Length: 413
Image (cartoon, rainbow, N blue to C red; front, side, top):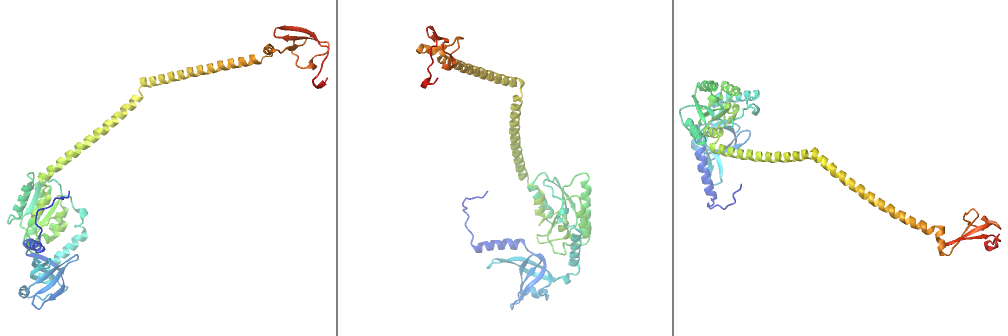
């Protein structure tokens, strides 16, 4: 999280900043061995020599003052590959860092040492010994760390101090060896073999091979082919911590991890107990959160299942069907009542209609009905003959009559 609080520290001037960087740079990067090609060579009238040293990826400005140039008495030129020894310095006025060269050697002056280094590097690289796919993972939480180094010097104590500061749970198994000079490569291999033997009964999680800085020749014992193949074929992860950050040896390329210094190797390999405890606390919190999430989900699924099971309860199903039948029965009864009432109303209506339209019912209004001798209703004059006897029905009785004449409407007979 970004801290937005206002700092009370006074700002630096550019000069103050450059001075601090200059002090830090010049304290840390001294007596460096650097290999590269000379470009942009400029021999000043003062006798100072200015040039740049480059490799395939980058370059660095260099200056060789007149006194050092005369002392070395080497006539180098642009395009020469050289090994120089110098100090990193900062040109205060412009804020640019450079190498102040104390001595310089042409490759030819080194003999075959560097050529053999380049040839071996190319050979092993072609065989695939440097590929990242072949490198073993460094354990996150080692318990036993093997250390191959010289008992002389400060390397052992530096690594011990870092291990103690970071963790109380690390066992450091030191297998001493010479790390410089003739026969040092064989001693390093023997020291590794001792750790392999120890590993048969007591597991070793990591092996650190370490030594302090030195010249190219000092570090040459780590450019041994047998040692490189030993490291490559080892089942235990190897961390190389040889020289300074700018120094590279063959085992740096073949090891599973390279550290810039021995102390940095210990920092990388040994987890800090405080960070470990914090990680465990976070892991426990995450596990508890996940458990709660799972319990909530399981509870929801249980409730859903219980509701589904309850929906298939035979007693509940019978009750539901019973309610449905009662509802249907009520609907049938209501329908019957409504239908019967409608039918009764229609019967009454039609009964009244029939009654009001019955022929005899209109006799009360002053009309009469004529019946023939068979008591059939006479509807037209043509249905009776002269001298036929007829009955004339009134509302209160019958009158017997005889037809004497027939008169048609509009005098039609």
